[in-house]
Length: 282
Image 1 (cartoon, rainbow, N blue to C red):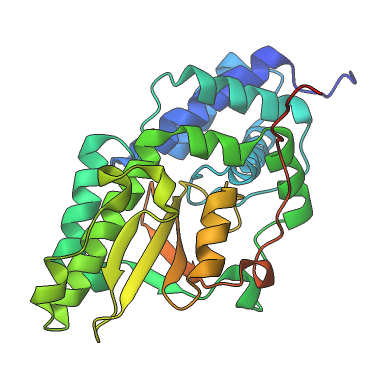
Image 2: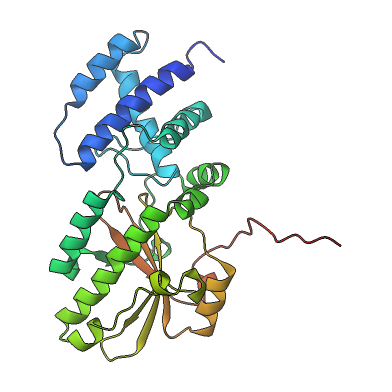
């Protein structure tokens, strides 16, 4: 380790401070970044204001790579040590003082907004269709996501997954009602809640003309390029129902949910990486 490298103790201190500010921001509370920086200078005396501010930008980049929200105003900067990623992961795993959007209070607010106005949910093109450069090197972010298994983290977070499904369920109902199809809205079904995950989709909804719309929902608090898990069964159901099936990717859920849709064939939009195999004895 070089003399200028941040120690684990320094990383833990600044990550804890970052998470405190982010929790306040997501909750809609005011806080003073300058004051937070000043206090950190007293706790980490060998680090000056500029170094602390740049480290906050590094944490934003790590959060992006890990599929988490980050602080507005601290633009992600990717020149960081992997020990910083370890510090952020430690904090995420501890869950201490961390406010997630999948808490019942925040989810309830999001659902209320989309019920009042379906346009509350911004649905745009998939990132692969955009000419805009990503905010940071996607290959570096992908490497972090792979090393720390970000897709698996989101998949294990059942509360986040259910919150995203609930959000899209209410969006579909509200959109149909707004189009004058109250009859269809009443028949939208949260399939994964009723029959479980084996159906290959989470919600059965309808197009305005009454055609079936089978929606698989994948939710993350992170950015639109955050990797996600998809099962062999979901892929098979997508291929067998190409006209009805769609994947709704919900992202930025913690702060302001946004989404894009993918239609089969999925291999035109996503790169599938095998992560596990079923093993049986010879």
